Length: 79
Length: 484
Image 1 (cartoon, rainbow over the protein chains, first blue to last red):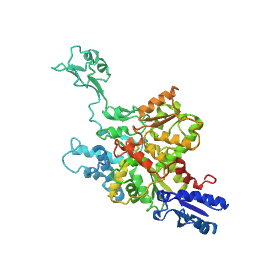
Image 2: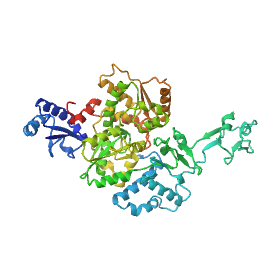
Image 3: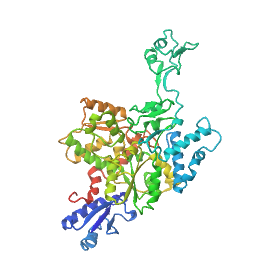
Image 4: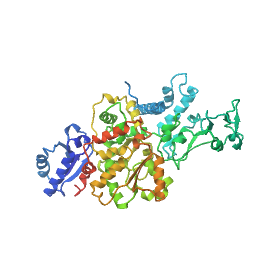
């Protein structure tokens, strides 16, 4: 599974740095680092929806507050 | 009040040519209409710049060629328009009105060519057809009334790459030229100019088919904060996207990456000269080759962020937009070529906006915020040294290694520091070298140069969300395992 976090300006201002760090932490904690590949991207073209996280082509809007639920539902459950 | 877009009318003329060339290129009608561009710019029957409209148009045709990429056989990014360069008779030795009409006539006695004569007021005159510019008369005049009025281009060129050829036009020694563009900005006739890659950029944008085939990235230099002052920076970003760029990335983020790596390299090696300014690097290589091993091994901020984009963003085309003509040469280096597809100056960006009739002041404000304060202040002299100091601190290296930076702006200051270093008498362990006075904000490709530019850069630095280099750079390591 490839998870791409937008680190472009608009998403950066909405907290993509926090999303990146927490995702890295969660993957390590759950020992999913080998199964999930993280990547960064400068702008996915959905600046109004940030922070944009793309999983296998589908774009999700994630905030630092919703990250926990998002991780369980879209990453942990599907990997 | 109408805000001033350029410092000089020469820049405005160059801009008009670029704008027309770009306008025709967007319409796909450049080849058809290229010969008409000079007449579009000088339509009337009365000359406004030169002796006649025909000469004006002949020079404009040369400007059109340079706007279209110039001489493909020459690697130099700076070109002289010979026919535009013949109106500087002031070159060389001249008698000023300080001449008192004295009795001694030392100037006449010392002149081996018999070039000095006196008028009815006993004031000296130099016969230019006899004078060989030896300077002997100037040395002996007790009133220092004879001065060497060098051409503005020769005066501007601190690496002494400009001489005057048999046709009385400026000639650039490509081996010595560092591409800084000082002569381009200083020539009052606009006879020296930088080659433009504006057509390559338009072609790339068009062939990207609205970023579907590949994505267009604009990497903008932090000195942009002191430019386009008639609009908001956020509107410039919107304008770039309206032109067809997928997104805009700060070169200052590349500067953060450089500061992080350079501070480590410096602590390890004990002495470095910076590698951010391509004109400074090229100057070391041509004038102080013995110091070349001390040049930092980091790519410049432009190339560093462009490399990151090329390696992570899939099929990307990267266009750097900044104040610098030397970046155009840097982008041709084998070490940089794979990452940077084209370089534009702020002048050329203004022409691109207007070629699409884009009034950026009417656009919404987009955002640009990735880099830290330290990455952003690279745009002005001293910023790089401050960032390296911060990098040492963030790595915890400042206990072991004490930074003694020598921040030089302008080639003359750089030369002094390099000369001292080559004689081992420099009291510093880091030379920050910027070829332009003031740093990048003094670059030849800036729209305007003003007293407030440094303050604008510092303000832009303080507005950055990220306050440390590490915070700005960390998200970039997302793909690297165990590197959080």
